[in-house]
Length: 435
Image 1 (tube, helix red, strand yellow):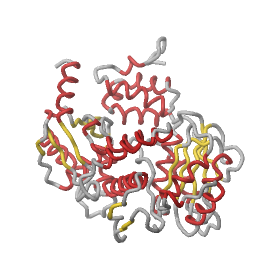
Image 2 (tube, helix red, strand yellow):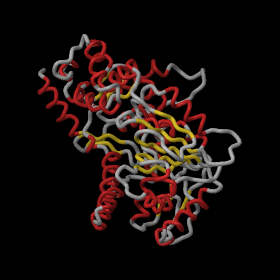
Image 3 (cartoon, helix red, strand yellow):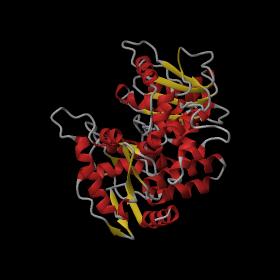
Image 4 (cartoon, one colour):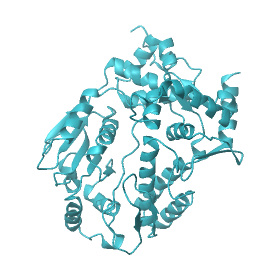
């Protein structure tokens, strides 16, 4: 079968499949539901759907499905091929849809057929519409996004820590959309040990637990020392003020991925939630005070008009809570001062280009990956069998990318879309795989 025939066949199979995750997890082909009876199989599928089109390592799947289990737990790595076999049988596609890639698996399905992806994309488009002064367009997008929900909780009945995180994250995004539309926020399960939260538009709200972090990067590689350093800085025992950690480095070095990964790891130390803002291109960081206040449960009509009043209310809401604030794309620490918490229970991670600059108490500098780490990242994204087959070309490509994660991801995405290409085809003219 030629590459073109493979792509055409894969495209036909993928377009027929539709997945619902905003409620019970279901898979349908041409409108007919497919039988995926085992809970663990659905948990594996949930992890793969969140990274559709990208390789997911075995370790990441195991962590997301089984999490931390005792020594008496069954051989999870040994059980995973059985999960994959049953999923392939249920999804069809002759093994083209769910492929073994290096030390992981890749689910090649159309993102437009996954309600999670469509939901999050609609929310992003609505945010853009609001920025462009298109309120009616924003309302239409939010309404369409909310109509995708098939039940009160995402991945309802799916076990595992990944599914639990997804339920919290997606419920938070849904509630933000409901508040934008000034609609009642539906009752939801906030998680183990937490009672149901019922909020009505126009009624007094208690402080909510926002979970705004982007998903944990599935192919995150290296940075062990920096992760440990950030973890230590955020978990200072007996602290009397809010820690501020600055992650600095050149563009494309993977600062944002490092900050998000570290924030996920620090989640247990900040049980009241995480606030996140992408400040790239923002002229005034204080403009994010209003959405932060809404995420904490403040009614739209109760958000103060002036930035100083919003800042005062923001600090009052965070005063006795343990919330982590992640601010990505800041020009410098002083630029984001209005968004920084002050109470000792909270902490902040600020991502800046270049050096940390003034106002930073603790800075973590990020540079290119080590050559072996860059090679490992490339292998995770395109499959280890390809890098093992062309080790010299893979190292040369990593070097040509400056061992920078962003450039490596751009190159890897082209190679993933073209499985018949050799890695050497991506090398710059005049370079050599033997260099």
